[in-house]
Image 1: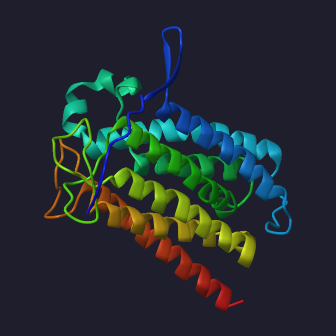
Image 2: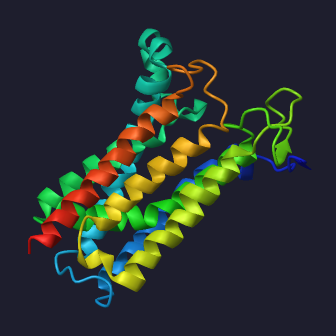
Length: 270
């Protein structure tokens, strides 16, 4: 077994007077800037995308609405899925974003809502937009999980296999660095797979495929890593060995498969 030392990195990236810029905030900023630039690149690259309805104004509005959708969705997702009893008695604290508490799955629903709104406003298809979001999202996920690691939060369960690390915010046991597992699988590997499908097989020209693969693989990767991730302290295991992360990831996995099956049937009937 490999024993790793937790790196001594401040969760604050830099400070401007009384204002602290944290790694987690920086991850969101970098993620959205990358998505904005990368979506523009893909939409303008006719070798991989054939859509004429995706223009720069649409992309600018998409990023703006996605930021709002992500913040609202991620916060409400955490409140509803992870700590409903507490926030139902402390409603004002739902607004206390600086105290932490965001849910990926809630943020996903917020961004889906933003994509639906943009598709209606610009009279384009939902999947043309969602594919572009999905291919750029893993970069933000990667930096978000690295920030979780730097903060010493969302750490793994006690480990007696392969890798173990002691986290400052946990007990003295060696634990899985599950944030790094997620950064690799949900971030780096997923980004590589989706871009391989786009540049090798031109899957952006068949809207829905990239969205389906993203949902399927993220759901699979997250469900798998949850076996090494410590359940949220206020929830524990929701049902037998199932954590809330598993329960929320399973519909993603199934939705991804359903999209791919439907797309396959439609392609076969053409």
